[in-house]
Amino acid sequence: MTGPEVVPAAVAAAAVTDPELPMLTLADLGILRGVEESAGAVTVRITPTYSGCPAMEAIRADLIGALRRAGHRRVEVRTVLDPPWSTDWITPQGRRKLAAAGIAPPGPAPRRSPGPVPLTLGARPAPVPCPRCGQPDTERLAAFGATACRELRRCPGCREPFEHVKEI
Amino acid sequence: MSFDDAYAALTDHQDDTRWAYGTGFSDPLAGVPTDVPGGVDAADLTAYCLMLGDDALIMSHRLQQWVTRAPELEDEMALANIALDLLGQARLLLTRAAQAEGAGRDEDDLAFRRDAADFRHVRLAERADADFAHLVARLLVFVTWRLAVLDGLRGSRDPVLAAIAAKGVKELTYHREYAAQWVVRLGDGTAESHRRMRAAMHAVWPAIGELFRPHPVPDRLAEAGVAVPAAAARAEVDAVLSQVLAAAGLPPPTATDGGATDGGAGRDGAHTAALDEILAEMQGVARATPGGLW
Image (cartoon, rainbow over all chains, first blue to last red; front, side, top):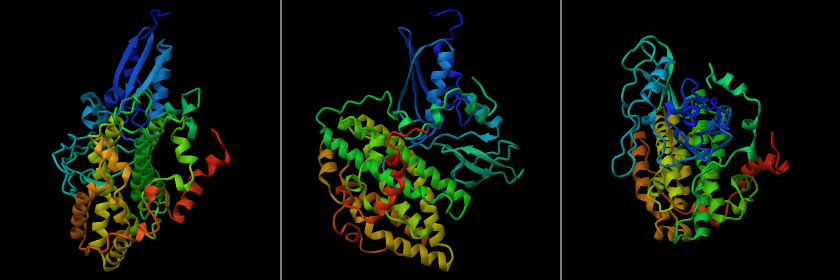
């Protein structure tokens, strides 16, 4: 059954890429929460980035397909909701890959203080440097981008528009 | 597995399970423990998750109707994103409701095969928007209220509800910033935008009272440490709305009760004709082709 061609489940699962940010693996993105092998069965735990992330179906199918190709026949993919995903879980390698693809990686996720969530009304957030020319601050064009996790920005230096992964 | 772009990744597959619609989607709570905590009434938990899930489902549908009609492409993307987040919250909550009910139903049964009188959302969610100012006024009230409620639910004794809430709070914080900034921009804009934003706040105001109306289900669950009482979110909502109105230069509307709850409340299944219109659109395909996959 487990011939030399079998790739360890943790290695195969960690190499699966995100369908919407294909430069990142699930491990880079921090949504792969665990891979366990027991008695010939593999259990993979993943967490969604956002509640409505439509990529979860594709990620589930990709994981099962990749693990089967790696020689694992019995695969279960489980959803983990707690603790909720944070952009702080994107690995340093993931951040480098985002920047190399022209997407500004997130800064530190907002810290929660006791009491109600404050409404900032556009109070100046931390500056986002341009991933192309390195200009230290850029302007936001739209708070919501092509996917739930990204916003649109523009660099006043090189005039290029770019995407930024929102801190969450 | 590595691909140069997302399109290559999508077209590589031999099967097309990912393109399934409706019942082809997998359980969004797959692998999450389904037990109802001890001392919690399963019927109440079912009813409460339906309330919160229906709020999100119906509001999401109303937002989706703005796609292709918003003033700017960026706002269509924002509204579509907010609608998608709410739809995700609805899927999780309806799935949790179905689990707690234990009658073999799933999220699709609850979304597509229930009649209007079985929906439990507040009437605020189903209202039609006369213009963009009405939309952002209604969105501001809805997401401000929902953020306050879900923030209180992060400590729920039901671990599934607590996890759904913790995730939702992060999303709703972005939604509230978006809606609040539009209310300020229009209220503090031209004489025409001010007039219309003021009219929109005035129009939505009577629907606010229903949000805090005591209801036996959340009140009982609050005693069991599972829910927050309906009235509990009021102080936070009032404070945030006052902050936004002040920044927008809009006078505070009056009369926060009555109006929208005449003839019963959405939490008890008393809805307006607006819901019939929504369900005809939202459920039409699923009802016409039961079990259909494509």
